[in-house]
Image 1: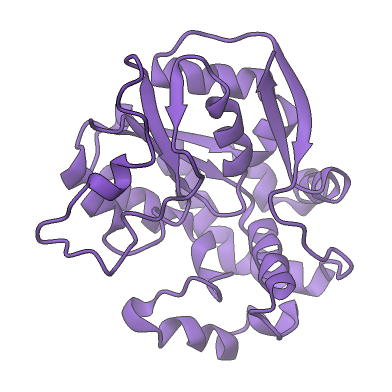
Image 2: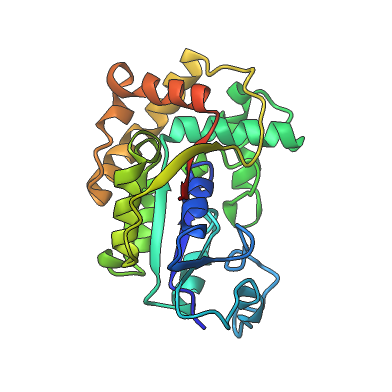
Length: 271
């Protein structure tokens, strides 16, 4: 058994919604749990890994179907994508990209709700707090990487260096919210599975987080300036239209209202 595809990014980008849709698709078998965290597991001897643990989340006796799993840290975590390529160089990969400012805020809200973070958002994103990431082993951190995970271009360039372009699909989170039918059709075409047209939308909130702290304009402006060059590079690399991410007047506020109103992601269930 080899898994056919992976939803490998990004955290807080809508991967739970996409996993939920594919989990209900009759031609797909998703892992029994979302986020196996296999390829980012540093306890595995990677000079000779045993893939039995990965495969244990699937039923090998089922008829041939597309098999996949969703662990959004893979695109960020060092060596995870290289390990995945060794496992299956023909795997298809999906990245769901969210406005990096909104992604960072959602990430921070989750960690404060969990009790891992005590700093206010305005401090957690500043250079002094980001030292927690820089000084961590490998210069990465599972909890405090609010800013770092939003630099998408290096992650995407790394993927292009490992996999052919036709094995990569890039989506926008707000497209999954605003036009789920078209976005899911694109996913099904990419995975070469039968198109399921009849779908019912509903909300999914995999982790309730405190939304009482709004995004202060000065904090949003600080992060927007930090991400501007990366957004342009990401747009060039993926072909996605990200101009709205660069222009608060035309595109920045609308996704924020959607986040507030919808709480998180659109979930699509096959009828």
